[in-house]
Amino acid sequence: MSVSPLTLFAQEVEMADSLRSSGKIYVVVAIVLVILLGLIGYLISLDRKVSRLEKRIPEAKK
Image (cartoon, rainbow, N blue to C red; front, side, top):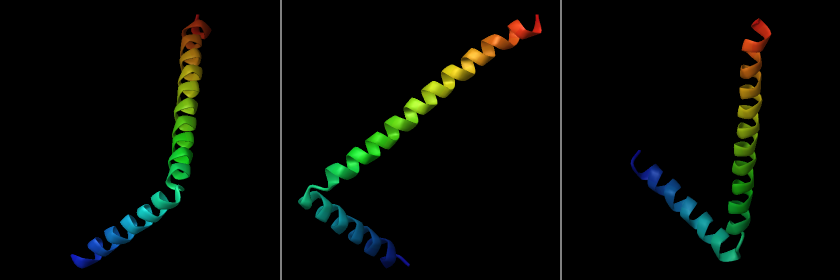
């Protein structure tokens, strides 16, 4: 049981090394950053919409 995590870790390092040596690691990092920035942008816009709706709720009750 204790050998299997070490084997998996060794394989991940080899994959990272091969991506780094071929320069593809930058493509992976760029894609991850685009996805994260997209999620953050979506959450910010969603927060703004919810805030606008929360401000309208007291106005609708009056």
